[in-house]
Image (tube, rainbow, N blue to C red; front, side, top):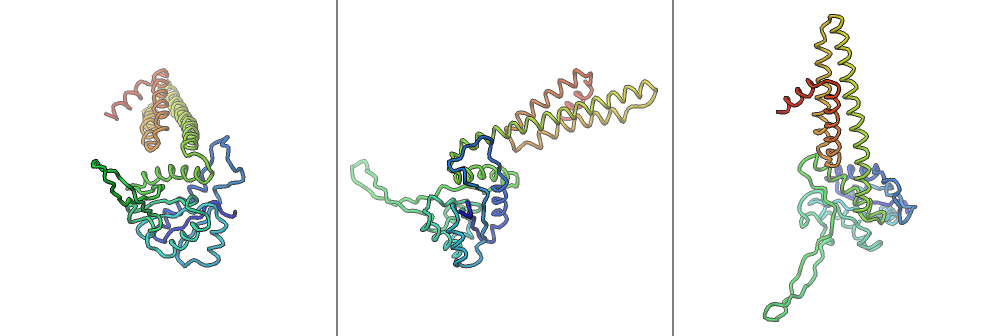
Length: 279
């Protein structure tokens, strides 16, 4: 196969489509992940902004694709070009090889009509009569609808893992757990380095201040700089990682470790200043 993922969308959804494609291409599998088919490469992605009817060249690309990802929004629902691609691929590969991603609107107004299935269900009433009702069945879809850029980024990371797992034939939960473990290891490394830099810089300027005082010079600027560095590091790191709950756990640990180390270095003034600024 030339493509593992063929993404089709209308031009109104080009921005989020490109973001999803980039996220999938840049995703790195956790170490030691065993693939059912080692030859599969989920980063082989074709993006098709459906602005022209289905022709032989597009059919050839779809024939050479393992999965079709369709970006769903109110503009997609009745778009003839998107529906032509969807119908052609479904006939060729089956519905199990199609992944829906909703980016705007409610499911009923975003999914193409052929995505919606109707099933007649029989119910036995209390008086033992049988009543038939038609129920609407909507496809399970990845969801990238968000009110803020931060939320969109969070959903993009989550759905990237789920889509990748589907394409690779893996259970999404197993891949997500491995991904979280890797994120925790990365967070520990970053935060440990930040804490070391904070403490080292504060210690250097403290020493410079001591030398300056011993020589009869004024060390207010050096001392103030050490305070600002320590406070900025301990206050800004939690804000920077607020969208990553796993990282926040290690941020709290690193900040606590920094506070204890500052106390041991005799920098109680830094602790007092940090606590006072947060009140």
